Amino acid sequence: MGFAILDDDTFFLKADAALGAEMKQRRCKPWSYSMKKDGTVRDIAYWSLPDTAADDPDEAVDLAKRSFVIAARAAKDKW
Image (tube, rainbow, N blue to C red; front, side, top):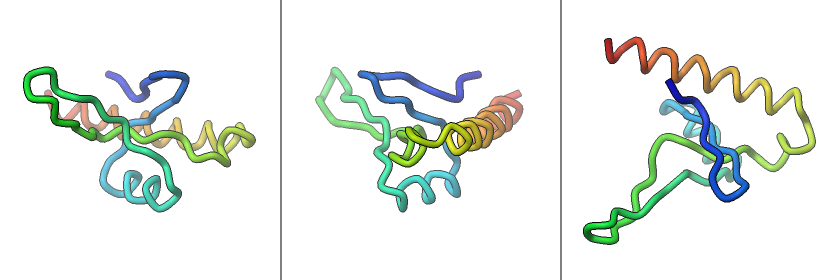
């Protein structure tokens, strides 16, 4: 079960629709990648940390905990 991705020195957290909307409102960036076959870019349900979380470890931990719960729920739903 994954709840975070580190890509190119940026930390991304898994989000559901509600957390994703919050992260988007806070100007976080979605994690995206390009498909090798056709070059299209896909965004998936992982969002970068807000800038304020870089200076506030309590905020970063709170977001990571929320993301972990979301990832755990998604993993449970798959079984």
